[in-house]
Amino acid sequence: MNGVLSSGAWKIGTIMGIPIRVHFTWFIVFGLITWSLSTFYFPKAAPDLPAASYWIKGSLAALLLFVSVAFHELAHSFVARKYKLSIESITLFIFGGVAQMKGEPPHPKAEFRIAIAGPLSSFLLSALFFLLYMNTVGGARALFSYLAQINFILGAFNLIPGFPMDGGRVLRSAIWSKTKNFFYATQKASSIGRKIALFFIFFGIFSLFTRMPGGLWLMLIGWFLYTAAQASYQQSTLQETLSGVKVKDIMVRDIVSLSPLLSIDEAVNAYFLRYGYGGFPVIEAEKFLGIVTLKEIKDVPRENWSRVKVSDVFVPHNTRWEAAPEEDIMKALELMITEDKGRIAVTKDEGIIGLITRNGIARYVQIKGK
Image (cartoon, rainbow, N blue to C red):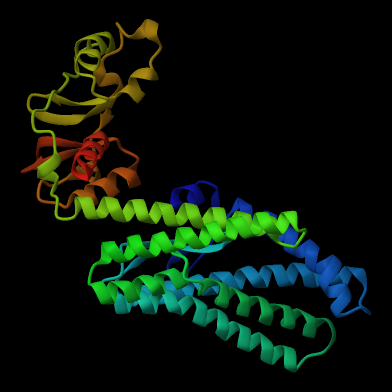
């Protein structure tokens, strides 16, 4: 899910050292909220104001709503940092906000505190806007009334125990504390989260047929929650399967390498077609130079394969694309995903001793899962 969000998001600033990004779907909701407030809510709440004032207040309310969402996510981030967990970014999108946390909480108490910080921050904002509402009049009073209500709803909604919502994380912390098993707690909370998501979807469908308001929105939220809960379940299962597994346990030891002097035509016929691998390390005089994959091969026109050498197309090795044999395999997998690599080198004493590939990890998980 994080990858989907980051692909269509733009950085708008940095707070507490955390990049704040806005996904393109945010603009859709910003426009819808502005239009709804300007044409329905504010004319009814403050009927004596000019039309331009409604649009200004509608835009301001929509903007402050998303500031509130960012504050909610920053609250999570602030507590997470207390437990040495890094936050890669905060992304505002169509359903609110996501703080992309690297790693998992160290214990159930940390999980609870990180999760509850978001709803508590929303309730705090709700109380603040309510105080402003009580001490203002006219259009400003209507504005603060809306913000007080929407922040209260935001806090309450996030307490629904549907993982990976805040309430679902609170539930996971309770199950984790009781069972002392993080993976079981994640899978159980994710399972409950999927059931709640399905309830949203079916209730949304029911609302559409009975012409109740918000049916389509409930279906979209349900679909998003179901997808997120399913992804969390699969990730937890993967982590459990690979728990305690080292890079050396899965790496390919019998390395088949290419000479940089080979032509692309020779490399394809003698290696890619013969072995069926998606990539090979390039080694010359026992020195690891880099890796050539089918992606680089396909970038060369077929008629030039006999003239182009492997040395012309291979990707030079970078030390950040390495794994040590004693490293946890999950760390290597995270590196491959982050760097978008299908394979990385396993090195020791500055020499390559093996390869780790995504397909190899997938096969291991498939076999262990049976």
